[in-house]
Image 1 (cartoon, rainbow, N blue to C red):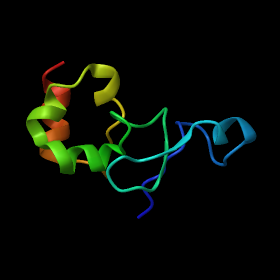
Image 2 (cartoon, rainbow, N blue to C red):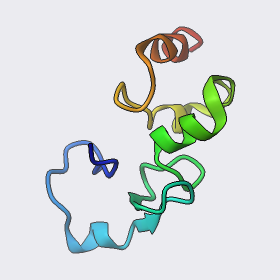
Image 3 (cartoon, rainbow, N blue to C red):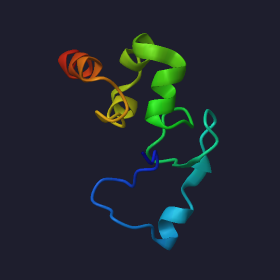
Length: 82
C-alpha cells in the first residue's frame, strides 16, 4: 500500500505539489507535508506514538487520519470526542 496521498480531490501530482514533498521522519519515504502529522505519515505517527497521542492531537492533525492509517475503533473514538 502506498503511504503517499494527495490532498482530497487531487488525482495526480502537479508542479505545485512537488514543492510539498518531504521525507517522512519515521519510514524515510516521500510524504506530502500538507498531509503529514509532525513530519510523518499518519500511519507512521500512529505506529510510533499509539492511540493516546493520536487522541491528544489538535483536530486539524486528527483530520489527516483515514481508516487505512488507524483501526476503526480509534477512528470512532476520534469522532466521538468532538
